[in-house]
Image 1 (cartoon, rainbow, N blue to C red):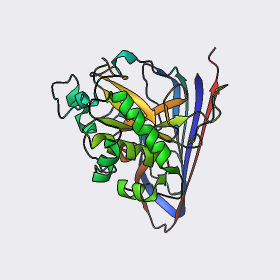
Image 2 (image 1 turned 135 degrees about the vertical axis):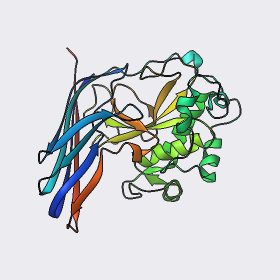
Image 3 (image 1 turned 90 degrees about the horizontal axis):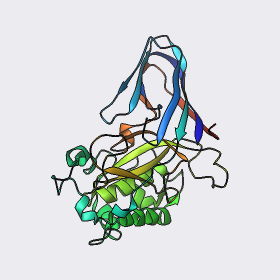
Image 4 (image 1 turned 90 degrees about the vertical axis):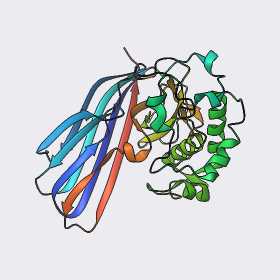
Length: 303
């Protein structure tokens, strides 16, 4: 599938902002199963400085600084992306999950690269509750993929999609208490359960097709940035961005499915705090502000 992705973020303030320094994660990644044909990031008002770079995890990041006084800041990105969806050698899926822990077996090829994704991070606390919830799926000797997918099924079944139940800073205990949340929360919850047992897993930010391809159902989360989880499979050779060892299986607990050609990957990291669509610092006397986000992912059949 070929998608045209439009993502617009607008900040509005009740007084002038005299200096705005920001970072945007809105450029899709180049992957073996995903090709970025074109991409453009526009900042309004025009920034005094704008540049792109690659961060620690290989994400393309846009940096900018707006120096002219403004009460409205718009970050707009348009990308054309071809997605085929990853393919797998499923004969290796039965590898016991205990043999896929980078900190327990540092001799695993690529273990050093996956190690920081097997420990706690600011928004993914490895609580006892997360350990216990994960243990129901991660039983002794069970195949890694079967166990991870069972955990995905249980998160989907046990937690309601409710955009009023949590906030962008909700913790793992708060998600358990609410028994609900949004895609960010479900990804964090699944990461906490996996990492509590020593497995490496990363948070992925991206998009879903707003209008699904013919014959496929519309998925939850298609009107905004979406989030899902990728679990490290160390026994499957080169990873999906062509570096290190092992592959990463993409699982979406919000929709209870493996990621396929409906998913456009933008950035990945330890948790949401590593890859929000936009973040930064402003200098202003404003006391109130509003945030408006619009996302459209329109599919077209490739020629």
